[in-house]
Amino acid sequence: MTEPVAAQLAIRELYARYADAVFRKDADSFGNCFVEDAEWRISGTIIRGRDAIVEQVKLVFPRYRRIVFNFRDPIIDLGDGTANVRIYVSELSMFEDGRPFGPIGTYFDRCVEQEGGWRFKWRLFQTHYAGPPDMTGQFFDNPDFGPPPAMPPLDAEAIDHTGVFKGHNAAKS
Image (cartoon, rainbow, N blue to C red; front, side, top):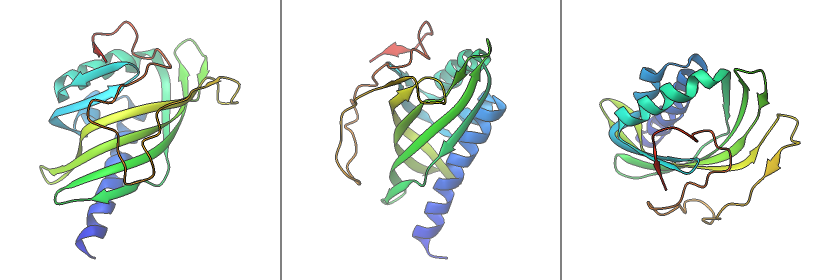
């Protein structure tokens, strides 16, 4: 196996571990997907640092009965111990009150090789659809950063289309 192939497989494993942690609502395993000084830009918030990310998901997870992520094949641009990744995701979830939720979006990720594996260093989530899984909800426009390997700037805004983090203690973008 060549080095680039091994790196791509390890990055795919990162997304699998992330989806598993979310499905099990395991905040510590979720946090282990991020480097210590990671930044996560999602739903109008900027969350800085692994500890803050873990605390944030501890507030969000109880709002759901279950969350299932379906990641598409990632587009990976490898560097020396770094990777820029664009990945499309659909979610099939149910809130605690029984409402179904099926958002669709794009993650733009900057990953680094650290502590024997790959982890997220910087993430931006763009919501393209939010609502029930039957697609009767709302679709949203987002900035187009161009075809891969183009990535958003590090100060790109995390537009709040869903309100998922509303009322929680994360910095507004």
